[in-house]
Amino acid sequence: MKKEIRVLQFGIGVIGRGVSKVLANKKDMKIVGAIDVANVGKDLGEVAGAGRKLGIRISNDLNHVVRQRKPQVAIHTTSSSFKKVFPELEKLVRAGVHVVSSCEELSYPHQKAPALAARLDRLAKKCGVAVLATGVNPGFLMDAWPLFMSGVCTDVKEVKVSRIQDASSRRIPFQEKIGAGRTRKEFQKLVKERKIRHVGLPESVAMIAAGLGWKLDKVTETIGPICYRKTVKSGYITVKPGRVAGVRQVGRGWIGGKCLITLYFEASIGAGESYDSVSIKGTPDMEVVVKGGTHGDIATAAMLTNAVARILEVPPGLKTMKDLIISAVPQGA
Image 1: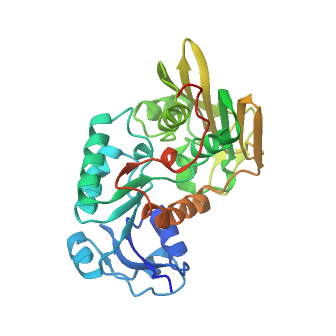
Image 2 (image 1 turned 135 degrees about the horizontal axis):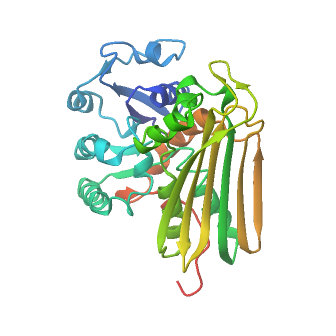
């Protein structure tokens, strides 16, 4: 009989709570600990909204939990910033625990933070564990998915990915994150403060390029507001004409003055439709569209939990989703 994988949930925010509910129903996994700075002493099941107590008390003492509960894998869900979470990752790795993280900047950190990425890779190899960041985006829709699709192409000339979301039914934190209801001036101020942005587009551009063996000259990113001439509403916010309804963000990868990778992200109240699409120009051309789009919260929890068993099978070190899939290989590579 196959043994259950012993899992530690590190971070009990929105994503961590969603992951905990999924883990609670996984027959091949067992939650053995929960780490967070809030709700210490409370039952994880109650905090996560699992519908029942799970018999796991939230703790802020990682060393104690690791010694007592001996987790094999930690699902890490605390921040988007690689630099900010590095100390947390370092503690987990030194404790001999494999890590699956939702940290967007960790999804492909080799371009923006090569020194820190190399440091984590060396430490993970020394401690005999693997570290992987994944999720719905980055982690799947705008990087791993197009790379996997390229596996049936003999060559690839251009990649375009679009994620269009009608944010009307999303949580209020998400609607606030995309600037819904703000003036254009307020929106631009928040963009400069990096409070409005989807984290991960440059990382996804770099991952696709690396997976295809392309050496990019540069990666660019633009962020702008989406405004409508009519009033649009969600269950939380009413957006008057001319005010910001959402965000449009585009990441691009350039070679020889040509844009070969385009990642188009749009989320707004009143968009009217949601879909995810990947278009590849190559041999053969490929295009796939997911009508209705992919549910971000469900998909994120699924990607993180489904990666738990896989992380135990790969060699030690810092991994990316590029390392786990088959993609097109350029001629002569």
